[in-house]
Image 1 (spheres, helix red, strand yellow):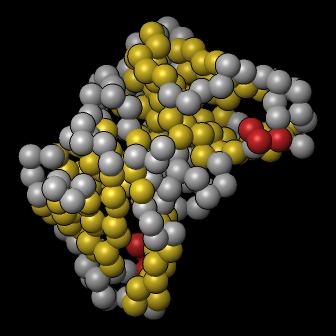
Image 2 (cartoon, chains in turn green, red):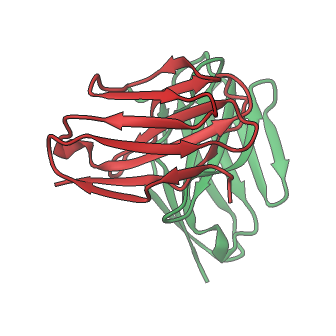
Length: 110
Length: 115
């Protein structure tokens, strides 16, 4: 049972445009959500998080939106830069373990 | 650099063998987590230790075991290895307990190939 789903395995975006990565979850007990970025041959790196009491959190070029009624979160990157090319994992949890999605490979086209 | 160190980076072994993966957490972090990432899969949580004690358990096979030592480093032992155990194994650490609010910092992983 996959409780956190990233339905797009890959996404290509032109440099300078907005990248939108999506994530759906099924467990209504999740109250904290995170995005991690992973480059090849490296471990995942924490990017941004959001608590269920909020619907938006912004950090520079990165914004995470949470729609609790739809059990959906998204990561917006604007403007997209070549260095943003990586695999992005969303993760969700509460007082228990984190559950990760399968990742979306983002490619920024110069 | 996340501050989490995993050794070795690569491991090639044969079916039926036993291996040990090692993880040194960030300085001061009490929690260590182990994850498995198979091809095109997400990170599957295996087990968490907090200050030497097992705190949470995920989809960890009985052939796998882990421990956290007094100096807080952790080892993941994989035995009776099968071809399907070939994967990337990540260790992460955080300062607190199991809550998702405790940001986890990941090592670079150990790539295990079982031939």
